Image 1 (cartoon, one colour):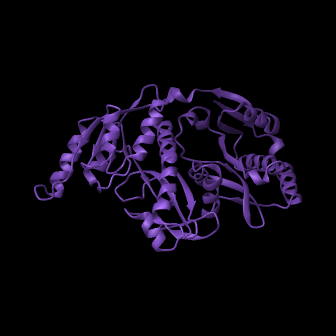
Image 2: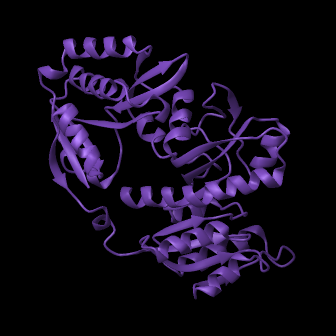
Length: 372
């Protein structure tokens, strides 16, 4: 992987900005600069480009090309507060602005959209007073060549993403059910995901997640709550002690159905949860915009899919987020919307959502590892 650097000289001045806008207009596109992309655009980005970019775009400004009222391409620029390890060198220097993410809908590729958006975003960084632009974490040689050819970029830093996690991170998984997300993590660890799965903690003795742990010789801690013999405070203390004994650096809540108390959340800040809804990036919001321009409730809580179907929502989704004291309101790592098919049953929808969870939970873990 490489970080590319672009000198924001006169090539990205007012004339270049005007020329790029004319090129987009000639192909039937309108162009909008925004200090903060709207919900519809962010949801469209997640829908088209995999679910990992909207948070980065949300952290800065964006230029968006649209045709017939629908987004066609975008380029983020000037992001602030991102914690990726590869931004701690040149990305932290005075006068260097961050370019990206950047993407064009497959239906609109082949024309001038991409090159125009790239130039406009670099112009935007220059207008904000940056002397150079960093294009971070570029891997494919063809994409490196594209940036070299189109923007005059040069390779400034090389890095191996694996070097950011030189040893596996001690991880405890907490689950209450079948453990399909747990299995997805087990499978990826076999393929090199740098986690040391030290234990599964389960509060349901009959949960199939326990069998999954035992099949790969992961310690399974079965800790049901005996309400007749234990108060809620006593159970929470026992749960806290059982997890603390494993000394985890990260905890994954993969279908865990017991609300964690304040002491637990404060003791283990690296808590990651997967939730079957498309949650807003701003945890204070109770609604979220969707790719088609509609707005739906956030559908927090234990029955998100059931609640979405009861509300006749056209959309559900999956979000992987950090856990805070307010349920399902922590910072989003990755998320992706899912359109509900007409007449779709709860079970059929859950099957599609679960399949997406297996993918996104790995993306959320990888992002957090790169941020640690």
